[in-house]
Image (cartoon, rainbow, N blue to C red):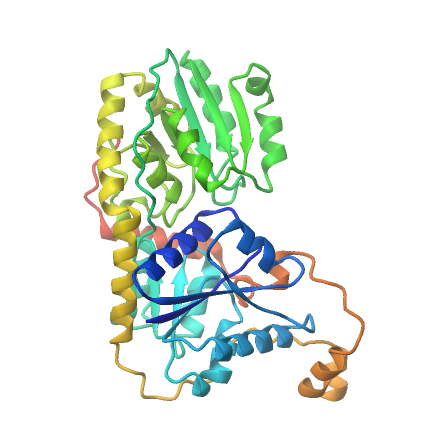
Amino acid sequence: MKLLFIAPSAYLLGGVQDWLYMLTLGLRERGHNVVVAVPNNKHHRLDKFNEHFGGIEAVSFVNRTSTPEGRIRGLCSCLIANKADIIIGVNIGDIYEAFWRVREKLNGSRLVMTIHAIEANYFADVQDYSNLIDAVITTNRLTELMVIRSNNISSKRVYYAPYGVHVVGEYPREIGTYLRLAWVGRIENTQKRVSDLYRILIELDKLDLEFTLSIAGDGISLDDLKMDLEFWVNKERVRFFGGLRKEDMPLFYSGHDVLLITSQWETGPIVAWEAMSSGLAIVSSEYIGSRAEEALIHNKTALLYPTGKAKEAAVQIKRLEDRFLRTHISDNGRALANSRYSSKASLAAWEATFESIMNLPIKKELPKRAKRAIRANGRLESLLGTNLSEKVRLFLPSPVAASSPGSEWPHSLQGKNDQTSILRFAEEVERSSNDDRSSFI
């Protein structure tokens, strides 16, 4: 198969980026022709992307006029220059309009959407572009069920393929007199709920637990979190490591006993599978997405607590002073991660999914024009029309660049959607998928 991934290049740290890198190299080793195409403008940089992900050898597409129309035209050129059996969208919102424009020149290419977040805009994309999308691939059982139950696309065109992690030999782990906790990820509150850490540490102190906490990651809430945890930082009980490279993570995990997860929702998380594979015990919020996935099972592969409940989280962490329980949790978690979420298992699932998509019936009805958020290019377009205004802009001084990666190349072109409603829908779907889950102990 020839596969073309369309993905951002501005975000170098994170589970989606690690997944794409690992999958690309793995599929190439299996004999497939895999091309990764990324934007190359101010915030999205091809050179930095290829430097960070050595061996991926991504190609680029460019917005030459800094307009919404310029984005689409840059993508159209990329799709034609890199014709593929399957085009896979990874959080680039303009792909749908670009595909619609050039679909007749692509010799029957299939368009696939991958979903990596429980966010309203992406589910709205499925609804609005279902006439163009040949298949949707999800990385979590809950998001798979959500797409199916939304009834926007046939269930036969919805797939599940998990993220994978490299299986590593367990590092020798010293047995200390205190618990060494770790928190890893994007430091922000909306999804990751990092502000919960402050309240959890207060509760741990009330329980007279001896512990240290290492925080690896970066994000918009980093400064606020450092202020919140200043008391423990000054006592050298909390340390901030910043965003670590992928190759540094096994050694980082080897110096810890427990991975703490505080999230509101997840479509993985890859950090859980990494930590489990490295022999850490998991203490996690019962985030949206955990029940349907059936990977973090309370008292078996993890210790769980109701999301946002700091006192309950501290109680579960305290239980891991019991080395027999800690060994029980870590051994079971390691076995699960190494079987279900290994890079080998993940690669096999994604390869089988792409092969299945190749065998899907061709949509006989000519797709309607993609429904997208129409955004005017500017006053020049109203005077000259789209084609001529774009040509003129190529010779004008460079306009003011986009202020952020998301405005330069949006993940989705949807307007603001109701995130509260999509999370409520997610909870309803998850509840109905696994009502007999055992209660907390």
